[in-house]
View 1 (tube, rainbow, N blue to C red):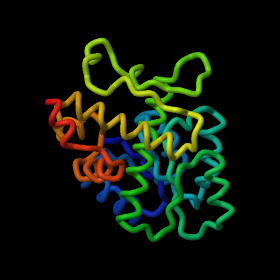
View 2: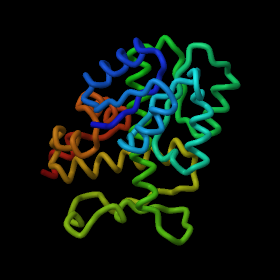
View 3: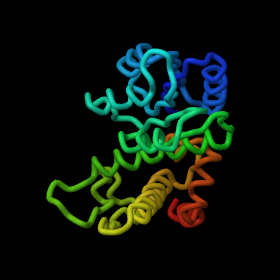
View 4: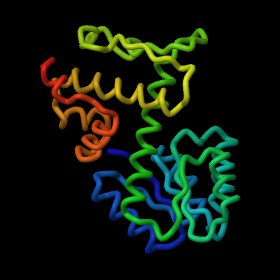
Length: 220
């Protein structure tokens, strides 16, 4: 599904997170300090990073600043700590972290944060790729469709970007999944492969967005 880099100086934490993420179908790379994290970031180009704040050489917030300043913060980063203050968490988010997990990390919170981080990154990348060059308050989903899929139903949908971010994101995500469901004739397996989501997470996301699954099957 995704390439995930786990950066933590505690061996037990690295092994636990690696096992959980691997069971979810992800590829996992481990780093125990900032030096190894820098090398892994360069070599594997992770889709998401789980980054511990307190590490012996360079702390996670400093590494986050370094990546942001050098243009390397191109992936979602989720900060982790068992002792960080609220100010530290807020600082990390301001720098560019997408979420903060407090240790001990529960399975449910970890999977939810990872899922949201990966999905948010996919939507942001799609928006960047589809956004028209002239400044406009409207984004058309038809710009996401290539010449071979122009006959796919319901792809010519426009989105008003002059609205709260959450509403705009939910509207885009719903159209995004409806497009893939129609294109894949309602096959959840193929949609899961195309969108990079595990089937259970995909079903939950579609239900949350109010996507009509029977409608996509009628188009098949």
